Image (cartoon, rainbow, N blue to C red):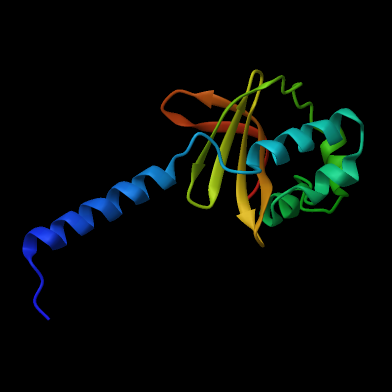
Length: 138
C-alpha cells in the first residue's frame, strides 16, 4: 500500500499536536487534590495519612536518619518544618510527574501504581539550580 507523502506529513503533524497538548495541561487530574490532602493531613497532625501519600522512594528516604539508622515516617514529618502551603496557584503534568505550586510551597508528585504520590515537598526554587526540598526521595 502506497501512501501520499503529504497525507503522511499531515497525519504526523496532527499526532504531534495532540501529544504536545496532552503533555503540559493546566493540571493533572487529581495531583492538586493529593497535594492539598497531604497538607491537610499535616495540618491535622494525621502524620500516618500524610506518610501514606508519599512516593515509595520518598517514604524510604523518610525512614532513614542521617547516621544511617531507621526512624518512623511520622517522626520524620513531625521533625520537618514545612511551611503552610496556602492556596493552590497552578499545577502542571509532565508525563508521569506533576508539579503543584501553592502560595508558599511547591510540591512534586509522581504516578505510582496509578495513583499520584508526593515525591518532594517544602520545595524552594533556586533560579537555574534544582529546587531545594525539605522532603524528597528518588
